[in-house]
Image 1 (tube, rainbow, N blue to C red):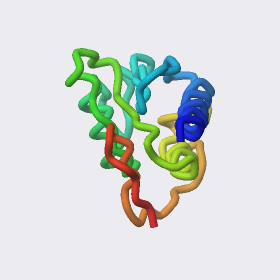
Image 2 (image 1 turned 90 degrees about the horizontal axis):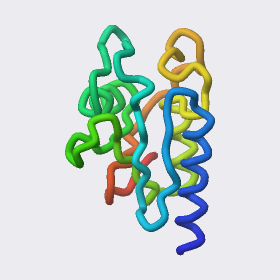
Image 3 (image 1 turned 180 degrees about the vertical axis):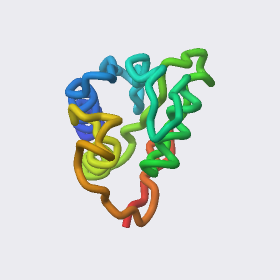
Image 4 (image 1 turned 45 degrees about the vertical axis):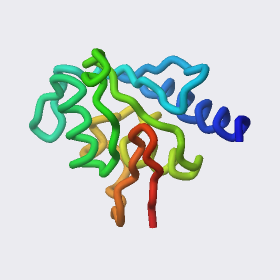
Length: 133
C-alpha cells in the first residue's frame, strides 16, 4: 500500500506541476498535498473573485464538484489541502473536472474541455474517500 500511495502522490504532484497557476511540494509522510493557490488569488472565476482558500474551496465544490480543505484552517490561506487517499482513476477524473495540468485552468468554460456530467462529487478533502459512479 505504501507503493500505491507513493504512486498516487506522484501522479497528483505531477499533474499540479503541469498547471502554470498552481504549485505543490512533494509531501514525504502525509496522504495529502498542500496546494499553493497564490497564483489564482485575485483572479475571477464565473464572476466571483478568488480571495483566499475559502473562496477557492467554495468555487471548486460549487462549480466542479470537487472538495478540498481550505488552508486557512491551518494558517495558510494561500493553500488548500488535497488528499490522495483516493484511486488514481479518481485523481485523473479530478484533473478533467478542474483542469489540473490544462493550460486554460480557470478559463476552460470558454477555452477548454467540454462540460462533463457529474453524478456525484469527488471528495478529496483529507481523510474522506471519493465515491464516483
